[in-house]
Amino acid sequence: MRIVIAEDAALLREGLARLLATAGHEVVAAVADAHALLNAVEVHRPDLTIVDVRMPPTHTDEGIRAALTLRSTNPSERILVLSQIVSGRAAADLFTTDAGGIGYLLKDRVGDVEEFLRTLDTIVAGGEVIDPLVVRQLLRRRSLLDDLTPRETEVLALMAEGRTNGAIAEALVVTDAAVAKHINRIFAKLGLGADDETVHKRVQAVLTYLRR
Image (cartoon, rainbow, N blue to C red; front, top):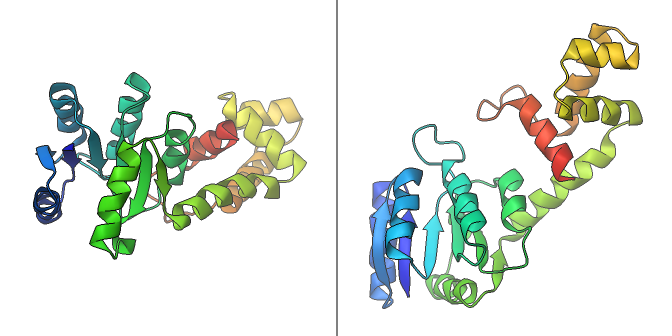
């Protein structure tokens, strides 16, 4: 099969390319950023694209966002997300279509080369392969919303409408301080801790709510 690799770590990118070539596949492009990935897929029209989640320039979720772009352009695009992290919020979007041909594996849990290569065949054939840890993360994010109180759910719904804390307080006839406390509890229940610097907590809380 013809494959495009998008991986910013040079050693891993080259090592994966050699592994695939040894297995008889053709690596038509091996790139280091999301912009180059989109260009490579447009030019080469590969049978499969292997993409990391975190890529330049911010090293947050450029890779998986590029994957979502590819799928929105062509729902039958075959994509394997191969990452060190569980990006549940974007993975959920990848698996929302019935087109198949999608996989999500964690790098440090790929322990068998032959099984990995069979996974590629499964995805290209239209199957879906997802690491159990990713599944658990997706289910966890869904169940976390069930832990919100009715008032917290109401606050989150108003946040999803784009309202400020002051506007939420006015709508619910409570103080700004009360709204701030509700929002902090929402963040805590959704696992959006103070040490999470890779995402905007308010945006991620709203996205979790909207995807529900």
